Every structure is written in structure tokens, then in C-alpha cells.
Length: 173
Image 1 (cartoon, rainbow, N blue to C red):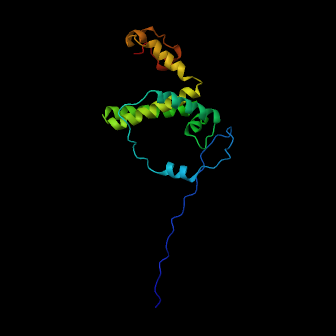
Image 2 (image 1 turned 90 degrees about the vertical axis):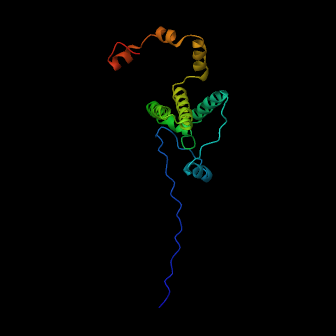
Image 3 (image 1 turned 135 degrees about the vertical axis):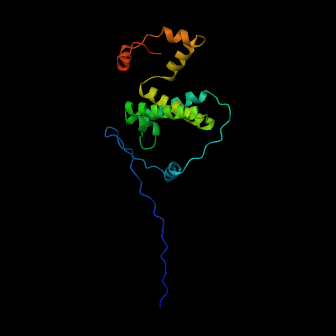
């Protein structure tokens, strides 16, 4: 009787999935590096971050998102991919991240709240870049409001009629 031998099973490398890109975006000729694919596929561990940060990171992030929009490489850039999918998708992602932030804040999960707040800021910036708004315009509005009571500032705003019609109310808090 001959011995039964077991064949070694070799793990097959999964086929690369194509990222859905709108037809209006030309396909990038560059290939995504294997290291990038492995990094994206790996479960990311939380970064050890300092307790305090520098707000200048927001300007750098904004500039990066704007650069990704200009280059438009939806294969290599998450920002470009989001913008290519349209304003509605960008707005949807911002809404999803905002809900996740609220959930973590209510649960008093500090590390997750910090992470979700970073996601909200990123997606907010992508939405604003998509709308053609410059960082300086937002920072200028914040400077304009500096030192003004939130109650006074809110009372001074005109309420958009379109929003009132959608809400089917004449009063908004």
C-alpha cells in the first residue's frame, strides 16, 4: 500500500480589484505599488499621537486635498476618488462621519471621538475643496466671528428660504 501524500496548498494572491472610477476620469497609467496595496489591506493600528497638536496641520491637509483634486488620480488618491464621485457622495461621507462622531462622543469613547473628529475634519475639507472654497475663506469667517457671542452671531444670520421650505417650518433653532 502506497503512502498517501498531502499536497501543500499555496495561498493564492488575491486578484486586484479595480477601483470604480467614473468614465469622465481618464484612467491612470501608473500601477499601484504592492506595498501600497498591502498597507491598504492591513488592519491599521491606532497611531500614538501627542496629546496636543498644531492647527497648522489643517492648512497642510487642505493643500494636500487641493493638490489631489488638481491631479485627479482617483486610483492613487482617496481624496481624488471621493471628489470624482461627485458632491453628493462627498456630502454623504461627511454625514456618515459626523454621525459616527456623535455616537462616539455620546458613548464618551475619547480615543474614538478623537479619531472620528479627524475623519469629520478631513471629509469637511474635501467637501469645501470640491465646492471651490479656499481655506483662507473659512479661517477668515472664523476670525470675523471671534469675540462675538454665539447667540448674537446666530441671531444675526438670515435664514435661507429654501432650508425653511425643506424643513416645513418657519422656526429653526
